[in-house]
Image 1 (cartoon, rainbow, N blue to C red):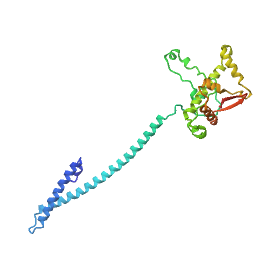
Image 2 (image 1 turned 90 degrees about the vertical axis):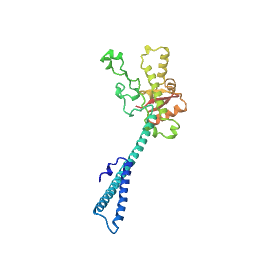
Image 3 (image 1 turned 180 degrees about the vertical axis):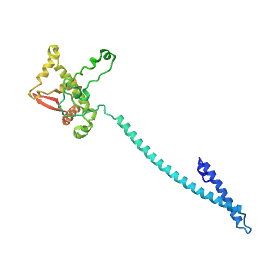
Image 4 (image 1 turned 120 degrees about the vertical axis):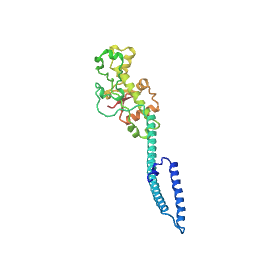
Length: 275
């Protein structure tokens, strides 16, 4: 009978069990009142009373064990609730990160001189992307081993998030991280367009390109020797930058972050990449 209480699977079964015990105790009280009569009771009654006393003691022990078990389960439930709240917060943060992931993931920036002939030394945004098409497969392993064509000029690396956060507020204004790196895209597009033309043989240029080539050569001076630069006109025509107040603020931030510098002279401002 000592383990009978623990065999109850539901609270209703436990309730029924204790109701039976209480009924037995009531009977016991009746027997006690009988035992107090002058004639006394037989030994069987004393045995039943002792048995009921043991049952009552067992019931008290069972209730104590159940109380301890309930407390342990409550503690586990509280810990699970805390874990649930932590997971809920983590899920919310991950969802926020997923919806606010920058469109451009910047490459690690350093000021080491790049080797244009090596693909691994190129900025992340300028590395060529190859597709495994059927045509490439038919051309064999010889084509797959052909070195990637390097850009005609050093390109600018994206601004990193820590760098953007360190820019003074008066410079940023309402500029966003993507606005700044959009200007980097425009700068690189203008740089590539210009220097692809400059690297073409002059004999293969048409009249329009030859005039543009000559215009680029006239923009050079002693201060631009060994550098690659573009002008506001290049940024406007080939980089799709409107050169309004926002574009000029972007150039200021790029200069502040050490991505480029200005070379002035002859009434012209030239923007050159720092590499």
